[in-house]
Structures are given as structure tokens and as C-alpha cells.
Length: 497
Ligand code: FRU
Image (cartoon, rainbow, N blue to C red; front, side, top):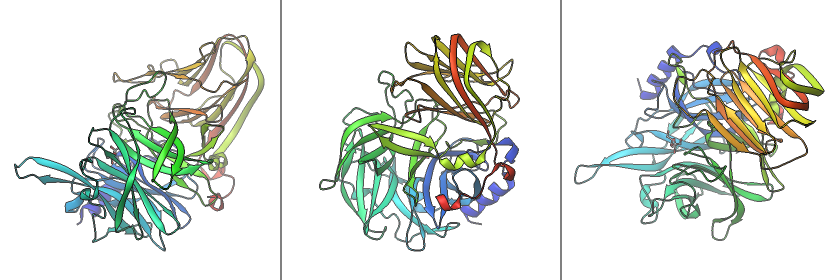
């Protein structure tokens, strides 16, 4: 039996029951998951691969797990696509991307290997590799690795050279990968190819200049709203005021692409998320021109989950990105709306003191609260609540901040539980859209001008929602249950992708 067959047999025999999983967020069938990989459209279907270690609930030898969807919301688990089973990827099939070619689905990933130096010490080498498939099974090409670490200019790290993201412009394929320069600072290197097998080095597309963390992981590069956006996930990043609090943080560098010098002239750098659990996002473009991003809804330093849970790791809801008026907006994919049932709406509702509202409860919800008016200074929302547990968001009007607190979500580890987010775009009203699943909340502030993503593994019977206000607030509330049962669905979304 090959290593891949072994992994897939293990997956089949240990598949977690649906009832133990979130309703509409991707998780591994069993074991560990980190970064999204190969997020792409192939033959009309959305494919998502991910860093996968089926055999345990912690990071281990990296495989590529695989699932597929017609609409970004309902996913079917497929057999794993890659296992670390060759000389050049024996230490792991690390992150990468995918692209549809004529009739085939090409995966470009990082092969990690360990080599012995002359003095018997070990050296890690990361190189880029190619696997070709039909949307179900994939084979590694004989030319691998297709980009050798030696192809990098002198002084660039051969040990930190990973996470290729590939795209095509006219007849040429391009690829960006994360790397480190002589000073150990992060940078993104750019390569080009005509056939995905022979690649030439072009440039450093962007570099860190000592500003944004160390190694830059998981780059992605695309045009949006008249600009070019480079997404990177820097390691070891220090907080800067209200920004970049996660240590391993994801950021977007926004600017103009100088195609002559293959260089991004960066004009603005923004945090992609303000919560505790968001990393390594990757995007794709749909046939109708939407740029959709998905991220690992977890963080390297806080792998918190109940000990008895056999799977570890979730993805965010896929989010549509838009760049307008100098703001990078993120909104849940519109396909999610087909799965909303049981609407409950309150218009111009006065809230003072503490209250619950009939119909506003549950753990798998799309809930929008719009603060319209009133003399309040503080307005709080308690989610996943019962007498013992809750997770809260508190809006402090004068300071224009939102304070998150999951201290009482059932946590049994001393991890970060509180985080503040400064609201950047002040509007007449404040619109808070909470997308909740059993173990997570994704908050979209003011139509996604800022987002806040966090996990909580609170027992399922904590399903109350409570509002609290120091004086009087006038609010609109709109709540839907999200259900993937057939009767919760209005028609097929296939055509829209
Ligand atoms: C990011 C990352 C990538 C790497 C992968 C390994 O979370 O460190 O740079 O390819 O995870 O699993």
C-alpha cells in the first residue's frame, strides 16, 4: 500500500461524524488541518485542499487533504491528494496552490527535504513541485522539483522558500513564493514559466524592509478594484498600536504593480483580520469575476480544542473581497444566503439594560445588529450563552472600539481570550454582522470594512443571545438560522460560480 493509500484508508476508518462538526465551516475528516491550499475552480467546481496530518490532532508529516463544493458552503470530503512519499518531499508536502490547465488540474506545492551536509549536520531544503490530476487523484511529475532552491539568487534562503501561488496571464504562468533575504527578513519572489515545469526567476516582488515580521508565508497576488494586492502571512510580527496583534499575522499590501520591474509599489498595508484565529488566507477568482478568500480559522500559538475531539482546525467562510474607496472589504460569499432559514427581524427596537429577544437564539446563525441611535455609551452582545458560558463583544462608543472576550467560553487553557479592535471607519450607524457556527464567530463590521474571527469550543447547549446596554440604544436586528439541510435551501447555485 502506498503512503497515500494508507492515509486514505485511515481517513475512511476514522472519519468524524457530521454531528460532531461545525455546520458550514470546513474541517478535516479526522486529524489535523492548517493552511488552505489549491483553492481553485476546476471543471466548474470549487476545490479546496489543505495542509493535513490525518494520523493525529497535532501538526505532523504534511499531506494535502481535499474537498469539493458547488457553492463554497456545502463541501464534500474527498480522499487526500498528496502524501510525503518521495525524496524531494519526504519531510512534507507544504502549502501551495492550484490552477486549471487544458483538461487538467495542476497543483504546485512545496516539497520539503532534509539533506546531510559534509559535516553530518542536517539541512532543510524547500523547493517547488508539481502534481497533475483530474480533480480526484493526482500524480507528481517526473521533472520534480520544478523549481530548485539553487535557482534563487545568492544569499536568499533555501530553507525558507515555500507556499507557491500560481496564476496565468496571457500565455505565461507566474508564481509567487515566500522567502527570506540575507538579513533574514521576509520577501516574496516571483517566477515565470510557459509550461509549469521550467521556471525562470524574475524578481523580488516585495520585501519587508524590517517592518512586517520575519519570514513571509503564503503569499497571494492579484488585481482588485484598480490596484494590485499582495497578501502575506508574516511570522514573528510585533503589534503596532491597534494593528497586528497575532504574532503570526495576515496582512494585505495594496499598491501599483510595476510590470517592467516586476515589483509592487506598496501604498498601504492593512491587517486582514483583528480576531485571534485567522491565518494563511488564499484566494481564487470565480468565472463571474469575484475574488474569494478563505483562511485557516486557527492560530499557531493557540491550538485550543476539547481533548476528546478527534479533528483539529477549521476554515473561515469563503469571503468575497472588494477594494473601494481605499478600503478592502470582506463579505461572506453570497451563496450563503440560500442556506438562511427562520428569519426573525426587529426594526427600531429600543434596548436598555439587559435583555433577550424572542427568536434571537441559536448557535448556527447569520445575525446582523445595526446600532442606529440612542444615548448609550456601551452596548454588548453575549453569544453562545447559558448560565455558565458566554463569549461577548462590547462596543464602547466614545473610544470607537469593540472588545472581545471569550474568557468564559469553556476554555481550559491559558490562551489569549480578550482582544480589542479599533473601528477605523466611523459612520452614522454601526453595522455588526456575526456569522456563527458551533465553534466560531466571524464578525463583519460595517459591510466587512474590518473583520474579527475567533473560535470557541463552548458546549452546544449554550445557545442564548443576550444584549446589554448602559442607557438606551435603538437597533435593527436581523437573524437567520444557517441550515444545510435540503429543505433549508432555495435552488441550485452552481451557475453563479
Ligand atoms: C503556514 C505554514 C506554511 C507551510 C505550512 C506547513 O501556516 O507554516 O508556510 O507551508 O504552514 O504546514
